[in-house]
Image 1 (cartoon, helix red, strand yellow):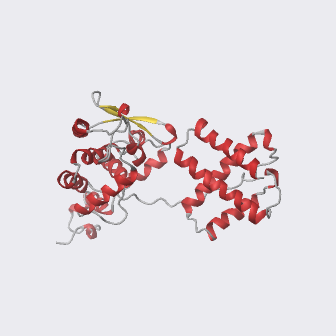
Image 2 (image 1 turned 90 degrees about the horizontal axis):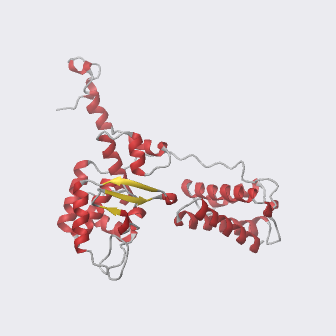
Image 3 (image 1 turned 30 degrees about the vertical axis):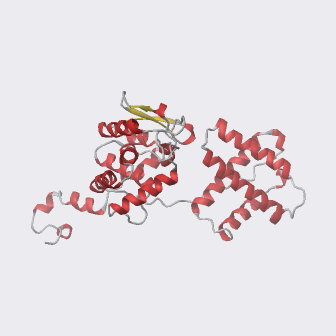
Length: 316
C-alpha cells in the first residue's frame, strides 16, 4: 500500500495547501499524523500484508487514536489534530473515485471537547512596564521596542510578526496588513506610538542582503520566532514579570483583553484578531474576580451599612 498511500497523501496535502490555503505548519502536522497512521495500519492492523483504503474500518481508526493516547501519551490538542487530519483525509478520498472508497470510515469520528481556559495576560501597568524595560535594557532597543509594541498594539500572532515583510507596512496611511492563518489577510490600524516606533527601527535597519523581512537579527537576517521568544523571556525577567505561563502568545491575549476592556465591541475584536469564528473571540469577554468585586460595589444596596453584600467590602 506504500505507493498508493503516499500518492493519496501528497494529493490531499496539495489540496490543503493550494485550495484550502492552510498554513505550512498545519500541512506539515497533518503529514506527520497521517504517516503515523499509515505505519500503524501496516504494523498493527494488516501485519505488513497488502491492503487497500476500502479495507480500513472505523474500528481501525479508533485503535490508532487509542494507541496515540495510551502509548504515545498524546494530550487533547494532539489527539484533536490527528482526528482532524484523519477526518479531512478520508473525506477527501471519498470524493475522489480513483481511491474506490465505498464508505467513509472516519464518518463517525468526533473531536474531544476542550475545556476553555481563561487566557493569561498582562494588565495595563505590566504591559507599560515591559515596554519601558525593553527601552532601558535591550541591546537593540529600536528593533525590540517596535517588535513588542506591535504585539501589544495589534494582537498579531508570532508567525505573523516573524514573517512580516516590508510591503505589508503602510505607515503613511497608518495601517499594517497581516497574513494570517489560511493565507487570510487582514488590515489593522496602527497607533501613533507604534508608527513612530516602526519608523525609528526602519531608519537604522541594515539588511546584510536584500531581504523583505521587516525585523532582522544582528547579522542582517530575518529575526526568527525562537529569537523573539528568547528576547521576551529575558525582558519579562528584567521587568520582574517572569511568572509561569507568560509567552509571546500571551501578548496577543493582553492586547485583545485590553481592547475589550477599553470598549471595543466583540465583532470589531474578531476582525482585529483575525479569528474565523466569533466563539474564539468570546473567551476574551472574561473579567477577573477582582473586577467583579469592584463592579458589585456599585450595587445600590451596598450604600447601606447593613447590606447583604457586606462580604464584598475589602477589609481595612
